[in-house]
Length: 67
Image (cartoon, helix red, strand yellow):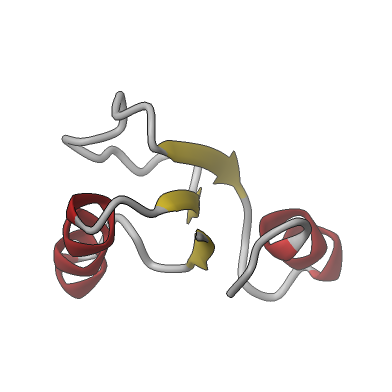
């Protein structure tokens, strides 16, 4: 399943993202340009730069995702 995740670089988001990857899901995750994630090189994650209040960024995040 392809899952869109907001907040993937935060404390709870990192735990959620790792769990979803361990279950075999493919993820599309938002991150701010200044954010870093220790698991950012994982091939199951497609990172997109975006902001929560931007409608175009939101459409980019969820397009093609199952949930």
